[in-house]
Image (cartoon, rainbow, N blue to C red; front, side, top):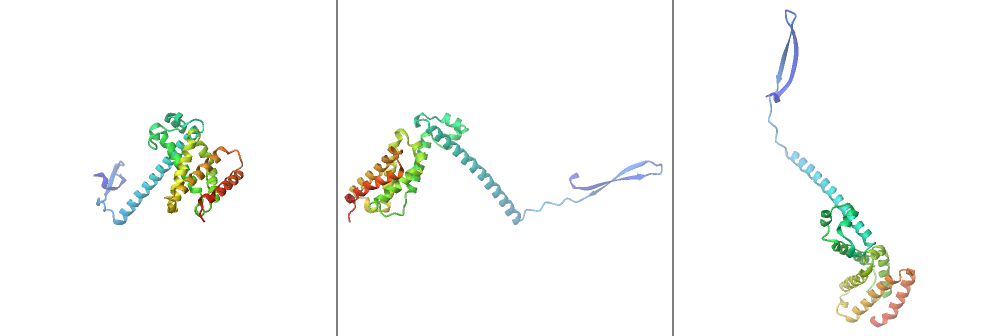
Length: 239
């Protein structure tokens, strides 16, 4: 078994007849059995495997994030140029440089992708509305101003995602979500039909005024709208 040979030394021996003979002196080292790993070794191995797994997961996360970004950017580019129903998965995949199976691993179809982006945009609008104000019916002009500012902050996405026939869809979603949040924070509004109607009027009125007057100065739009809601305030604010 040559696996246990430690070293080999070659010597030249001069014989009487001046001929050289080679002699190999072989030194053997006894083969010792491998020691089992210690607890510290096991911890080190486990830690190394964990780091490798984290690194691999991090790499996968980056790949997924890049793919998701590519899908969304491609969709927004297409959506800015054509109606939702005219967009196909094939052309989106071509623009995003991915295959169809990759797209379907992220979204069920084009409509699911659109709905996801719409929901995120609505959430962003709601998040931008200040939560530090008093009840909206006690300070309706502040509520109106915050609603306009939230819409303007998401102007680009709103104009792309909710263009054409989708415009009214955004207004309905905003109304439903704002009412839900307001009634969660102010339970006394839940069973008040008059306040519910006034909320619809304020939200839908502000929203459509914003959509149909984007060529006007924002300050003017906010000022006029504040005057309107202040005039309406006595109808639903009871001192």
